[in-house]
Structure formats: C-alpha cells, structure tokens
Image (cartoon, rainbow, N blue to C red; front, side, top):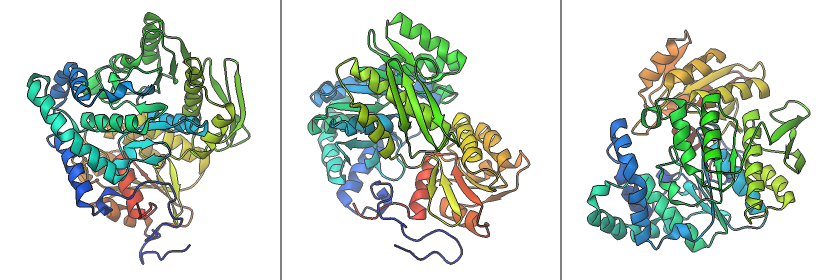
Length: 477
C-alpha cells in the first residue's frame, strides 16, 4: 500500500504497512471519554513533580503502601509466578524477549513494562494482546474506592503515585487473565520499587549504569545495591554484564543470599555467525545449553547481550518448574517486537528511532549505527527529559553526527529545546532549534540526501512522539 507524502518532507502521512509494530493507537487519537477519564485519574497521582529529596524520603514507605492497596484488591500479586527484571539499560528489551520465548512455549504470559511510547495500554500485555481501553477504564473505576480507602486508613504512608496505582491495575489484570507467569520490569531501582511486592521465581538484573543518581546514588555501588533488592534468598538470578563497581556489589549480594547466579559474559555467552555481528545470526551457549542460528529483529550487539540474558533467565526458570521448549527460544527471539529501540522506519530518507536516554544507551546507539550503517551521514533529532544526563548523551552522540535539530517533547519534565541546543552547541556541532517534535522531524527530513540517516534519540517520550508523527502506528484499536 502506498501513501501520499507531505509536500516538504519524506514523512508518509499514513503507515506504509498497516499495524507494522502492533502497538495500540496513540492515546491522543482515542476519543473514548471513559478511557480518557481513566487516564486522567491515573495521571492525577503524579501531577505535581517531586524533588529528589522528597522521593528519597518516601522510599521506605513505598512497599508498605503498595501492600496495603493490594490487600484491598485481594492480593492479586500472589496468584501468579513472576520474573522481576531490574537494571538501567536493556531491561525492557530483555522482558520483551523473555515474554516472547515463554509465549512461544505455549504459556499464558503477562508482561509489564514502562514507560510507554504512544499508549498507556502498552504497559500491560497478557496472553498475546494489550489490555483494552475498556479494561483500563473498568479496572481504574474499581481501584478508585480502594485507593481512597487505603489513603484514609493509613495517611502516614504517603500519597500513591501513578506508577503504583498502575502496577496494582496490571496485577489485577494478570490475575483475572490467569497468566501462567508474569514478566515484570522494575520501574526505578529495585528494593523500594512497587513491583518488589512480588516474590519472583527468578530475578534478572540487566546492565547497570549511571541513572537516577539523585534518588538511588550518588555512586554506582549505591545504584547496584538498590537493584539488588529484587534478589531472593535461594532463588536463581541471571545478571547482565556490569561495570566493576556494580558487579562487586551484585556478587556480594548473591553470595550473601545464597542465590544461584549466572552471568552474561561468563557462564553465558553469545557469538556471531557471519558479519556484521550486530545484524547476523548468532549462537548462545550456557551451562549444558547451546543454541545456534538464532535470529533477532532488533539491531545492535547490545541486543544480543539482552537476548543472552533472556535465554539465561529462561534456563533459570526451568530449574524452578517453568520449562521453556528449546524450539520456543528460537521462535520467540525471531518474532520479538519491541518498537522504538533502534527501529528503522520505512521513510525516504531513512529514520532511525531509539529511546536512548542516558550515556550508556547512547553509546549502544552510536556503535550500532557505525556497525549497521557505516559511512552514512546522520542528522540527529535530539530531545531529553530534564532529569536525564543531557551532557552525557550529547558527548556520546553528537560528535558522530553531521548536524543536530534540538527540540522538546510534550512531557511535563521535558528539557527546553534551547537548553538541548545549548548543550549540543558546546560540542561545536551545527545546531538548529525546532519548537516541537513534528517540526523537528520535518526540518531534519527537508533537504536531506537519499543516504542521510535521520536519527531520533534522547528520550523514550521523543521516540513515541516521533513514531506517532511519522504515522508508523495503527489507527484502529
């Protein structure tokens, strides 16, 4: 199917392939007043930004507050086994891959991830489909009086957050869908995160890097201690490659808890089959396990690390009674869909969208572009949220690009476009400023040569707005 293009850019006005990535329609495109009221209710809990000091002071109360609400909901978190996945980068991709393998093995799987790209519904997926708008609305209505009761009975536990109420909604949904296993991405940290009310069969910790230092830090060891809070005594753990400071903390914690731990890069490794390594088939091997000719639709060697971590987690699940069919590992990885992660869009010139929002993720993007698109000139569309490491992202990405279009998203915590531009200019880059994401994309596309890559990065929210603008998303529920 062919679609008209806007007169001054190469951006299609509608998807080139219907339902290309299977995401729900963007929330702003949904007119249903009941669903919109439910979203207003959920977002109302985080309407006022909190300082880092306030977040840190609240941490000791979070799990007590969460357990109180879930008790009023009938303790849905106790009705399904779960895998918890913490980390700084790659935890969402790892969750998507593990869920895909478990689903391919015939299990009813729940998957909880965040943040979303274009629709709140993306966060909650079970048995092959996203939670519907009607189900979000119905569950939000159920939660209203329960949240009010929890607050009234224990005001000293503090205010609920959007993430906490949304987590309760998801756990209720998983319980009612009777999932066989839930793959749950931790929000921030681990020890005090709302998801840590679960008692995971397997704990997974993806690579840790410097992020949320104001609330989890100030050191990488502090961040690692927070992530290690999802480990359980005597339960298996799968860990991604870590910087030395984080690795030493995680090794000490797994030993203290007598948690059988395996590591990507040690017990588990992957090797490319052919070149280039980031885009070819690959082999994964671990204790007593060997998979060859694996394929993955996600670009980058870091995604092979994530895939290896997901395979290690699946193998660990088998030791606690959840067996994954070996053939399902291959099928699941080959079919995994995880939009907004070095995603190549079918535009002219090519747009690459990535949710890289810290220096480590930006480095993975930079290396993947060099590996998969060598020699191609790059125009970078850059935006960032105010609480992220803008300087680190800029220092990592900007020296590798021809020019920068600085912009800002609609997110309340978005860094101003001018601040993004000032940071990029300090590197000596050629920078222009656009007031919003559609204008930035139009400017980047206009006049670009056929071999130019327009790379969109710096924020998951930027990735979502870019995908919605390009029209690469379905328009029907």
